Length: 103
Picture 1 (cartoon, one colour):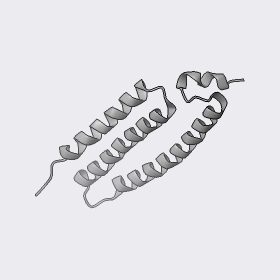
Picture 2 (cartoon, one colour):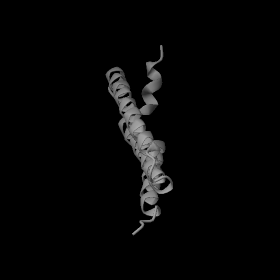
Picture 3 (tube, one colour):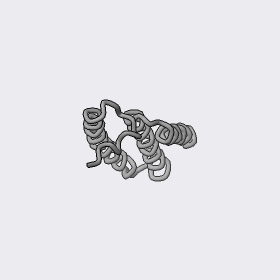
Picture 4 (spheres, helix red, strand yellow):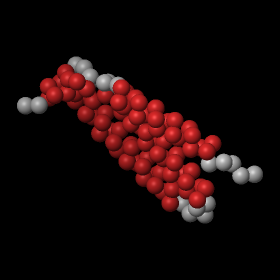
């Protein structure tokens, strides 16, 4: 019994669209980071689905997904460090106040 790829691509598209909407509309840096992670997870789902349905014997999509997860973890650690520094300087993590960090 073959499962249709749309059963996986539609939730991935919805996850990516929610991430884009959240990134554009939010001004809180933590919410923007969560939205960015949603977008990355939607892309990772697409990598796995296209690998599974186009090349079932190959593992390139899986390796790309593992690589993207590692990059996302490093990006999250760096973003959290930036958020902590912004909060220390401004006592707020609103994106509109970041220009106050310039010399």
